[in-house]
Image (cartoon, rainbow, N blue to C red; front, side):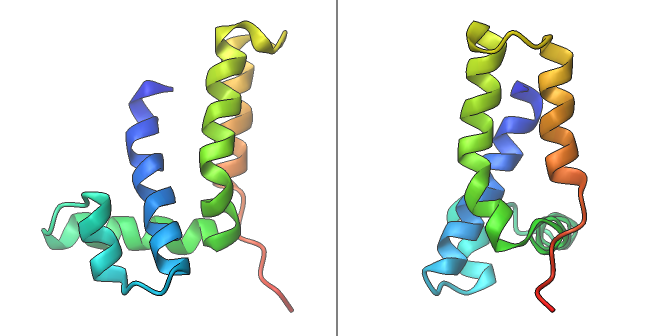
Length: 96
């Protein structure tokens, strides 16, 4: 979990700042995304994939998974991580 938490927190921060009206570049600067083009493009792609709803849910999902791994959930640790990854991997819901 520790290996992906840092990036997911940055993405959640970007989502929060975008919801507050910040520009994408400003949100990425504040979240600590490096300024080189590949890093910015990858972060933008991840933000688009997740969408604002899931970006807003990320902090809760990370806390839930972290606490579960520390014993608050009877599921095996690997299954808890898989559940988080599935939530992240699903296509974004698009309003029709």
